[in-house]
Image (cartoon, rainbow, N blue to C red; front, side, top):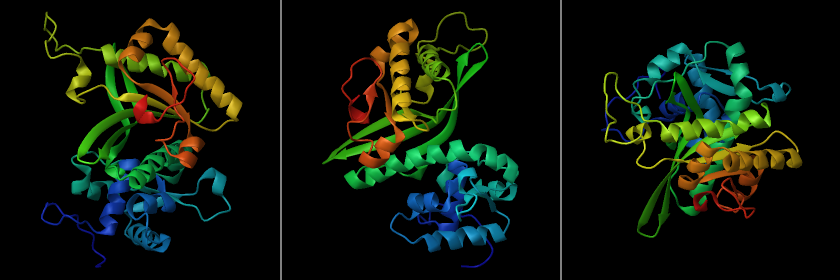
Length: 302
């Protein structure tokens, strides 16, 4: 491979080079460790293969890294795009017009690292499960930090939107989910109020300025989704008893808030512990339905 890195802009070459894929995956996911990049792009490949690609990209000034706070004495590196890397990544076909995300300094990266890497861990639990069951869910099916207007100048920013295709024989079932990853860094009440934001999005009908009558097209979310995505909360960062309390508070919000209750009647809502979905897989019965009940279910059966 030559040292010059020029992105392919045509569909004539369906297989992009590993370095192009690394750039695209960092553009998509913001930050990722070497091991996480390998699991997304070369799950059966060697760590050295991906590490060499990252080192070469860093030598070209396209990526850089920060050391996660919990890994100061280890060799763990969290990689991100530089401004130059983000400019180059705009031409990569895998991004499908999405704007690459650059991080301007290691200080800025260190602030984002703990949460962003936990979101990537969540994605990897789903992608590993998809490979195990023969389903479709790859690095481009997980879009972090998706923002939607919910009216009155407010916006809902989901930690991620997930696209997942369940394949059973000749049948293909397309599923979507908003994913909220909670590291127990906010109060339980504040976490539960995220459900109010999702209920507002579900009911929000954005009308063009000057229109006097409601549009027959339906709620605003139909512009992006054929059905409203299920809402999944993934909890970590505290003892089990505290995480169970937070799941209970989410259930209580669904039971008590009229707008959220209406959302729960129409949309599957669930919460699971990250370590459970990593150990057993998200398709295991580890998800507590937030619209009532104590029986845990697989995420696609909520």
